[in-house]
Length: 73
Length: 462
Figure 1 (cartoon, rainbow over the protein chains, first blue to last red):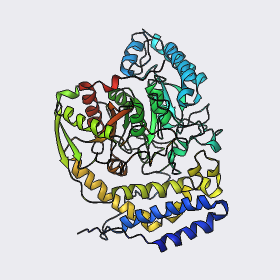
Figure 2 (cartoon, chains in turn purple, blue):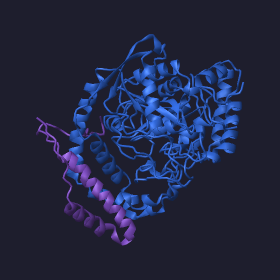
Figure 3 (cartoon, rainbow over the protein chains, first blue to last red):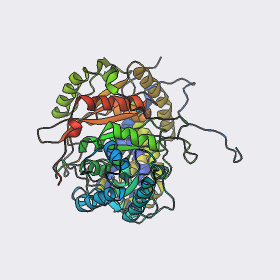
Figure 4 (spheres, rainbow over the protein chains, first blue to last red):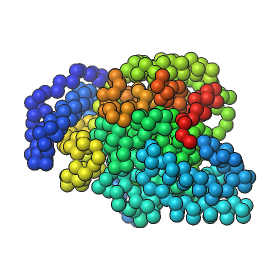
């Protein structure tokens, strides 16, 4: 049985992820741009919280095709 | 005959009957692209030399009695994310305005084999909107302008494909959709746009935005024309593992000879602008002439979060070089200079979770669509956005559940005109179907256009 709950984004999670972005790209971003990135990170945290709120079973595989490769086939 | 604003099927009959020559057609549309294209910021490159060579070849073949099919001798334009030799392929992005490729995209090659004539590479939103643009001015060729209003957006992201068809600059065009990029310009420009089932059309030679979401499809004056084009470009391709080995044969039979079962997702138009909502309500009444309409409630799933997570993560990887190098600072839209950096916040675990949830979305979509021939809804929740406004705030729009389900699950859809706002901007209706039911969706669009005349309205162009 899959149950959904309300997304629970946390400001701390946003801060931590924003710090990652800042460490990688901060030198090329203005304060206004960094604020825009913060809004983007916040939206992503909310978005993935909605994903995490859905329970899956071990048998629920990702939709991702993979096949071993042989050049002669 | 005046070939402008004639459906491909009519032009094709005239070409085959030698009433109009491919060279004359090509010269007519090249002249219109050159004269009127700049008015709509619709064109990146005219492919004059290639077009006239193809036209003369078509003329020779037709004179010799060799008819390749309904696209033989018909000019068209391609969104500028499709590689074509002899012209730049800019992806709409200023840093890539001189980019070239040494081979044609599969779609370009197939259309050439069908005898169609490439007359222009058409404008698009930079990187097909993959960097998070929020307003119309997001291409080095300027904001795409709808032929219905000098102040209204044509996009996006297949902006030029929509406006060029709507203004009679080409009989048909090829666009691409990752999430909304065929249906949205079709709606904003008052033309017909078809999004095929994912895997129906090879994407080899097309810019990759999201490998598991990108589709290529036609924009044209009618649903029938979309079927003719799809028949030419569909099919497997050894260069694109996602291109399915499923035969497609366009069924052009009378669509009104059958009764359709239509479904409407509960509340699908609730967040739309009044003009869109009212046109949709009237459309449901009209659809009763050709079928039944029932309300459907989908299972509760985070549809938009699933598709958006996949889109953001794959786009961040597809454009890793431009993002990491900082080259995105050379893009046109200011927000495209930094928005993509936020996507480093998507963890691998969350992307995988989205892919696992995608399986649920696909099963749920198939369950819903196994009960009806098509889901119907507004193609877009608002009429075309004013050029100077952010489209994410220009209308009291909620989400796009049909877009999230349809693109996330790779389902076919068609956008057809269904009215106008008080300001004279087009509204649009979409039909979305079960995977691989491209013919059913084309038939629904053709049935709609058999009982309405919205697709026959033309903007004042000149």
